[in-house]
Length: 402
Image (cartoon, rainbow, N blue to C red; front, side, top):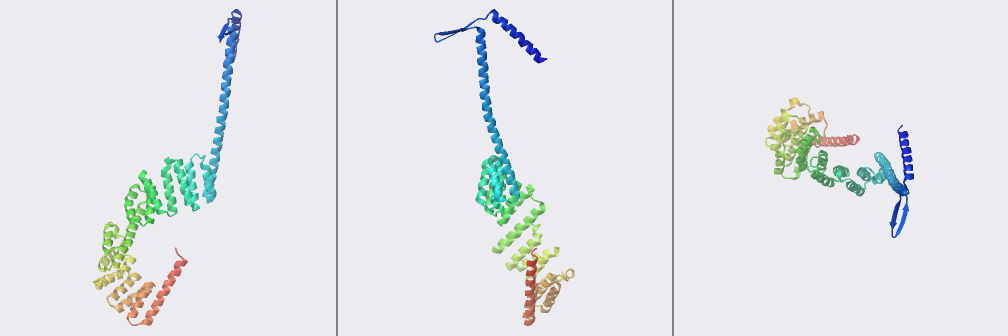
């Protein structure tokens, strides 16, 4: 209906225009540079319309030609993106399959036209590291930084992880320190920093880091507690190379609740025994053993003859009713009896300890006692038994190292 109406209007307009042209054709004169041209107004109008439509058609043609060029460019770009995606996909697949060389090649080639080239470079860095090419690894990481500076945190964390994997502890420390200047509340960075401090045996720095790890809840509470104990334990171990005063100072810096920990008490007692501070060691061990039994501590108790070694023996014998067949306590009593020159009692305790559980230390103590008692043949027999026990333990360890 609409089309019919338009056709009718055009038809009426054409009739009206034809009548007007017959009635009065008019004229147009154009003068230029001394020359004139005359034509009817209708011819002039027709010329203008033809010129207009010709110009319009020409513009459209030029525009379409330009659009074809742009379309071609867009098509080429789209093709490159598709190729990049394909290479990236293949690269990630070969990376997961452990084909490091292929993965690196595909990922680096796909990075140029990738939607996220920095991810390609990070993955390529991992592939390079697996090939032990650390220079290439750093090159790819730098390319990732350049491609997407906004992803600096993610790239730095990846760099630190790769450095840790390749045991570059100092480099990882620098990377994490720079990262934490920019983002001081990143819990994962602190977790990685914890690993660095452990590998560098930097226990003071680890202890300073623990409050931050607790606040950020970067690790479970039980793991943080273990870390704190471990840090103080190794600080005490390092104190063996220091003075007695320094060792005592370290012990005083340990929180009270941790000074009840058997492993820390053991470590500090060993220090005191090494520095010949037997009375202090015995007092510490006695107080601990009254509250909780520990075979490692009872062993040390027997290695620390105090100035009141007779009283020390009596205290240890009071533990017998509850630990009558404990080989560690029996060996401890044997040693304390030797310190008190109670040779017969010492022999009985040491033999009872061996009956409860054969142990190289007990064999040696008994052999030394028998030498003192003028029984070299018996002493040699126990030395031999002790040596066989050591050999047996080593063989067992090699067979079942776990």
